[in-house]
Length: 427
Ligand code: UGA
Picture 1 (cartoon, rainbow, N blue to C red):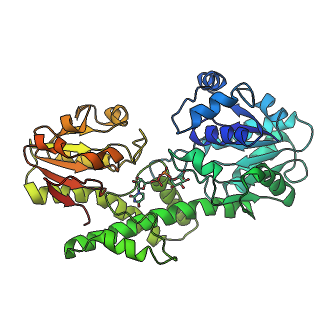
Picture 2 (cartoon, helix red, strand yellow):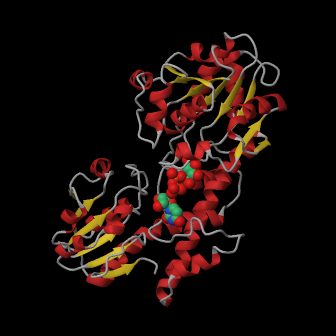
Picture 3 (spheres, helix red, strand yellow):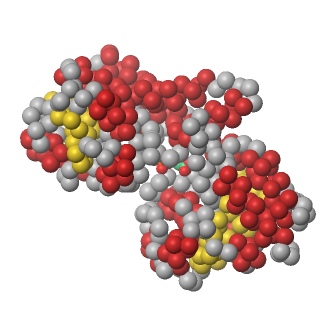
């Protein structure tokens, strides 16, 4: 089939390359000419495991990038909106880019004869596709949704770093369409993936995405709360979670307690759902508690540190791990950010190491000491806080020898070294 993908960020590019890989022809549309040039040269503008290889294989063949909406819409049967939805200060999502994309597609539809389906893949709160995107498409195209063009919502469930793998091996595909015709066409695209498709309406599809992420975030905050209680009672919360995870109704995944969840999705999506609930007059107590536990969790690292060594003024503290999770340079909502801010507020001297994320963190904290290795960051430190679950931290051992005091507070249960004064955050 012929597909156009609007927006060449992480979701758009992964979707475009994976569609090409399962046999479709894809036009990528982006307003950024530099990105368009890079994609046509087979160079991904972002890092995502396996993306470079796929793009190299299909750029100029099954994938063509352009800034021209008219060309892309004319030469495809389906358009996917994969643009960003940044959040405002109150945590609500900003839909201006989605609106602009819908308007441009609508204007292109006005000039195109024949049926076309517009699919929202960007994460948007329930009702957005039907009450915001659809009317813009109708107004800009002068056509009627249903008979003239189809509208659908198709959420993504892609983990950063594993997005290609997740796209190619989905545990579910959700297609929320305004009618059967649009739903069938979108489902047809995914046929090569051999996965059962949940066919529903757009607002249910939108809610499935939020409920999925909110539930996973809830599991983490639950594990953290139980972990905080366990810590006081001298119980290993990991033993507890391993045991309850054997109950098939619970499952062992996402029960690793520690410094909390970060990233561009969980915090943002839970807050956006809270905002939507409040907008319709519902007080989402549980979701608010999920965020509240997550905001307190990193500060428990610094509280524990102060309990152990007292006043932090002028003390040299090492932070190991800056990325919001392992295998990425992404620091968005990383739990290391509130920890470093608190250390600086308390007058500590901070040195840090991360295999990939230091450059990004420099933009947030330009004045702390970034080191090229864990060993260098640990040299002379009076304590170390571990914030990210990097595999290489499992191997750390002699690196701790250079510390002045060998206190290591682990926020991710990743450190295996023995000759240190080890303290787990919740265990
Ligand atoms: C998340 C979801 O896992 C994807 O399914 C979803 O598609 C994506 O958001 C999205 O909405 O686009 P991602 O943000 O890449 O993916 O990150 P995860 O791998 O889910 O990790 C999120 C955070 O939770 C990390 O900070 C991680 O350290 C933390 N975490 C994870 C825990 O603290 N404990 C756990 O047991 C698991």
